[in-house]
Amino acid sequence: MRRRFSWSAGIWLFIGAAYFLIPLIGTLLFSLKDGQTGTCCSLENYGEILHDPAFWKNLRISAVLAVETIVIALALLIPTVYWVHLKLPKLRPVISFLALIPFVIPPIILVVGLLDVYKSSPTWFYAQPYGFLVAAYVILAFPYIYFALDAGFRAIDVHTLTEASQNLGASWPTTLLRVILPNIRVAAMAGAFLTLAIVMGEYTIASLATFDTFPIYLQYINQNKAYPAGAVTLIAFAITWVAMLSLLLVGRDRPVTVGGAK
Amino acid sequence: MLFGAFQSTDGGFTLANLEEITKEPHRTSFKTSIEVSLVTAVLGGALGFLIAYSMIRDGTPKFFRTAFTTFAGVASQFAGIPLAFAFIATLGTIGTVTQFLARLGYDPYQHGFTLFSKVGIEIVYLYFQIPLMILVIAPAIDGLKREWREAASNLGATPRQFWRHVGLPVLTPSLLGAVVLLFGNSFAAYATAYGLTGGSVPLVPITIGFYISGDVLSNPHLAEALALGMFIVLAAMMAVYVPLQRVSSRWMK
Image (tube, rainbow over all chains, first blue to last red):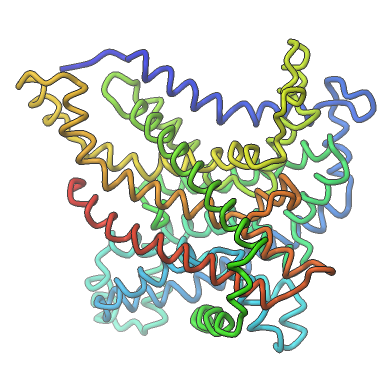
């Protein structure tokens, strides 16, 4: 029984598309307005942002933070998830439950706790974005990377791969780096792109712990320069798009389910 | 490190003066936060479900599903400061849509509307609530088997009867679970509301932010007490969500 495209479906999809697209188109038109006259169209707002050294400085800090978070989170979680799948399958529900905790303890609660815990830690850690913020972001990234890796490991035969590698005389590090890692590459990359999107957009913790990241710059521009803010908002949105589309592209060869609650 | 962070969040909580947060003005903050979360969870849930169903149902070209799912994946991550500004640029006092409407002779700001209010926050939150609903509910809608509908219509049921007796009862746990998740999603949001209103609408996360960073208001213990209050609400939400999730996964095999 085939059914025709119904009117009501069309109406709801239209409403959804309008709701999604109008703010984006609105921002685009806004960002093209001339700073003095407020009329269309000029690219000077983009020029102003791209020539602002603070833009590049904060963007660089956020990019470095993202890379550092991804490397640390993967280095912690790949061996953990591997070991759990190989030897401790009973622990899987426990870790999955732990991975839900960042959903119950959102950034605004997390930052209260973290500021308190790390208050007495050395300055090179507490006062540096590359220390304190990365610690916080690894926690935020934990569920996303964990669920991506968990799905990746479930899709391969961990036991057979490990035994084969060990029978051929490989050590544990060799097994992990040269046998397991290439097989979960897609899952690891999916988690990494999601983390990139999260770190590049994270405002709550960075602002309340007073660090200068990209979203902080964005908020500063929003409050001080109306039209260039439209330009920088679209740049931020483009970063999210690139990260999320890369996620979809790497996931295309093999379906990777990401995010527990999503 | 992970463990340490979570335990100490708990450890910090026990010291906090909890009594203060049940009094004004914090009572109002909790009320406002819960109200905004309820409105956006229910509205976002309803709209998200209708859009998800429209993109999945027979007769809708496959292309729509791919497009909407992709977009929902991106939009559910597109929150915070950029989202707030996208709406300011669109519906703010000099926003493009506002100016367009004003030129047509209807300036919403002349009629009591303002984006920098509770209603404004709700409109903006829906931008990430609806996509999240689409992502969460799509697998449940896939679980509604076509055979059930055909069986129902063979037995003479109208579409309305099908929904009343088959569709909705099967989907109820999934729908409730998704709405609960949306509630938590909105309850926990800070950056979007801050970017939009700069703190003029007293949501709980905004108040916590003030107590941590404000020069005048700084009071970390109150921030901790409020954070505990939020944690209790979110933990209660998870306690409802996890069992619902279990029930709803029954039909998805």
